[in-house]
Length: 161
Image (cartoon, rainbow, N blue to C red; front, side, top):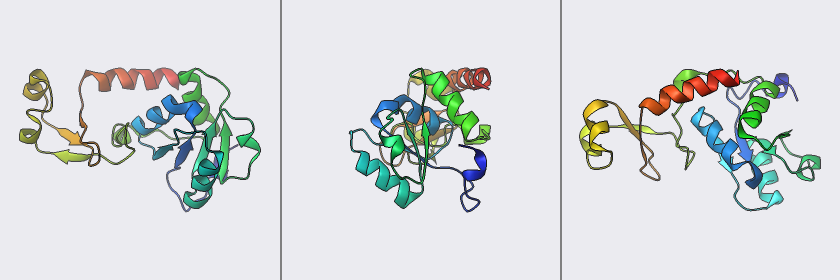
């Protein structure tokens, strides 16, 4: 599959990931991509999401790879770093640092800014004292901030490219 297959109507690809690639779904969300994760083994659900929502299917299921879907990438490796590399390369994804950590890694919803005072009892004291900007998922209420994990993640992404 190559990048010209992504239609110009959609500036950002959207994904649907099957139960075999759950960690890949989390990584793509952290990278800022809308990524639905289908936890059960329903090929029909994945196919319908792909066709109705124009989502690219990411799977290790060779039988699913033979079905008619919007687009599909058959993931070759069982190692997460290799999976991420494959998706970036095959779809020619242009990673944008400003999109990292903008989507909840659990719910796949865009996180929204939240006032510092509102997270005082939700984050460790040290984090509250040293970080000024916080974001929260409107669904699961998970709180995010740009801590040391952010810098570690950037180094990890650099190693992937």
